[in-house]
Length: 570
Image: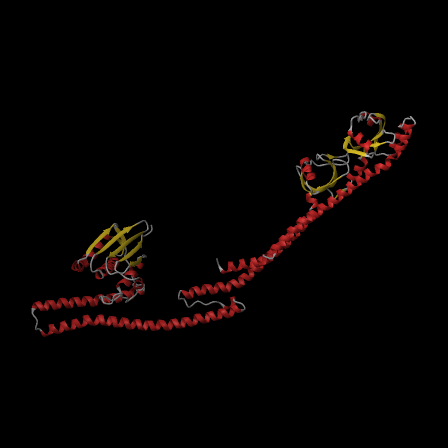
């Protein structure tokens, strides 16, 4: 993860973290606001229920005509004129009747002949309510019911002569007034019985409410109805219990309209939060860019410096505040390090030149002095033909050693200058390996070493002369540093590359010794003859083929040099 990404996430967390309590507060506000709205519906339902209670209480003084009925009955007169007059004076009375002590109807009067025909003769014989009223005279009101589609309630009132006044009280006009009231455009007041059935007049439309949901709401302790569904909409509201047995007043409104203000508030708050989030996002992005750019630049520059590149320079203009000073100090530090590096390199080059000069001078002096000595002896002429031939052979060997040293030095110069030209061709690898092994076999035989090869490659696309030189260097080094055991050449191939390994059971090397193994004029064992150029030249030639030369070794366990050259892709 980049520095910019980390800073950007930190800034977003810092900015958005304060929004969390705001969102929690919003949720708390919505929850309680919904309850407050439903409380308004509950208050209206209570008001309607109270009005119904008042309507029932008014029934007592409406029965002021009861003494007149008793007087008529006492005089053995028909009370029908009094009943008719009471019906005319009280439009809410639908039917009145006089019931005997035994519960049998004696007289009846109705607002119309049709209503009278629909009401069967009243017979309350064996009705326990009569016994109850005889012991405790009071007005007894029945539960809510419908007659001819009109909501009614029956009442029974004891007369002083022992008879009873029975009546049917209509709630039609009362409910018609109630049902005309609205809350908003969709809120209505409904009269619902305990089974969840809604009374609807000709003036009111009731959606297809679920009666079971009503029953569950009435059974709960809360008067709030937080959701009652129809096939198309969801309603919310509240209910209140009325004094009429089994009847409830429900105030219901479409949920979308009831909570409209909350939804509008949510939209406004959502837009507000979105605005804050957008500003915070771009603010964090800008600030993170301003803070992350100089840090990222310094980080990349530091990585380059750690690789040894002291030419890196950070533009001070990308910084601000303390970053400018930091960038300036960083650039000054890299400049100082570069100067120090140059001085150190100069010292190292001087030291290396001195070492190379001493090494080459020493190696040149030995064969040259030998040549001079042999020439001096031959010039005196006091040698036999046999000695003369011997000295000539020694002079030839010294000249060959001198030529090989000069050739290695020239090869190093050509390789470093990139002047090596390879002539690749398909070469039988087994022939090259055999030639190399034949070259070193005399020395190997003298030391008692076993030379062997395992070649699983028929031909390699290589420069024969260059590759043979590489292989000769590796095998001759293996023989040189192996006192007993074996030296083995193994070659294999796969679809992508050729692999050639030179394994030995020699003295091996420590991990610290391997580090500078392929450097110029580097010798691990200075007591052994050589110039420290063979492995450097070998790696350069292998890399010129596009391959790699690596070594694995352990002290006392031998070494393995691995050449890997990629195949030419068609």
